[in-house]
Length: 326
Image (cartoon, rainbow, N blue to C red; front, side, top):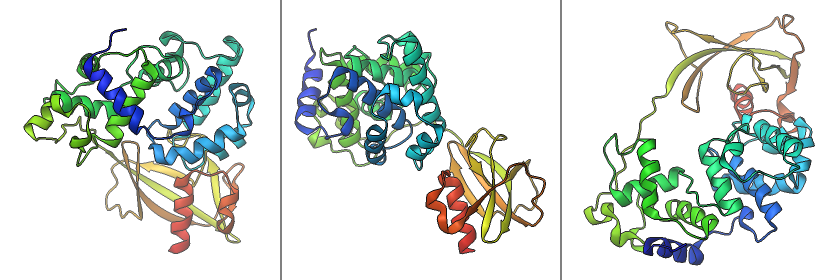
């Protein structure tokens, strides 16, 4: 595969400047597939620095796809605790089970099969194919999008639509080192073409970058509006313990332990006690203290002094800490 000059420059920069990340180790192809699968699930909506310690603990306790397919859910969630978006962990296990059952424990190396697995979309499938199988894919993550928008000076609404970015990304060409090249483009966005104050004088392709020539590095974004939602959170306390229930009601934090809550529709005179940002939802929470807890089936009581012992979402832990402070 003949490589363009821009491709060679980016790869040369990457070889000299890439970060040492635990999923980039020189390992067998089988382990690379597993490391890529786990790391890409963890990196969905989560920064690299946050993921590193979680990834290390995860592969130490669950070293391969067979172990992952059989791991107890309690252990899985405990290892994931603090990363958030717990559906990722559950989908990761479901994917492992499908791979073990239908593919003899080996990740398939085609897009159609990968994208059919729970929790794997177009980006993750492309990343796995590039990094784990060295296939000619450029996964379009936020870092690569940013490089592309600046390199081509894409500002208009129609220019920054996902469909157009997918077409335009081929300006970067392809490489026989597809796995390295996909990571090189991501790394360029993460380390050099940063959201603010990009380090253009360290960039290997700044001489062809239209934003650099115009000295205009502002990015136009597709703005997602946060939806305002209102909740009444009910607090029951007995002998210094708080009552929690299994969440079967809301799509967020599904099947995890939360305080009893109910959603309110456009309430009047709503004096919130707490506010949380979750995905594109702006959660306004009002706290109500109650005594009678007999109506709940299988309530779960937690001692605020032993929070570290429980498998709880950080959302619930933060509320307990707020209650203790107030």
